[in-house]
Image (cartoon, rainbow, N blue to C red):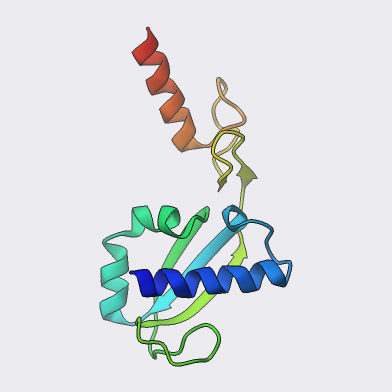
Length: 125
């Protein structure tokens, strides 16, 4: 997992240098990997965006073991694509989400923060 994280962090830095993203939270990461690595990553799919500190992670299966910059990779990841995350920036957690604005009560936060704020309100009541 740490080897994959290191590869993603290198790809994020390259995207920052190329001005495709500003911060890592502006990024959506797509990982193409062999079947074994895909299944491993799939079991942690919900946590990957926090591990990589990005707004979104997409997983796809692909063959080969060539890392994003063309060097041989041992992690099983064959491609790392960095794009700008879709949606709007949540003013509470700064992640980008297509669900920002869906809540009438909290129109400037994402779905995850809406749930957290509602929980905080229930605890205070």
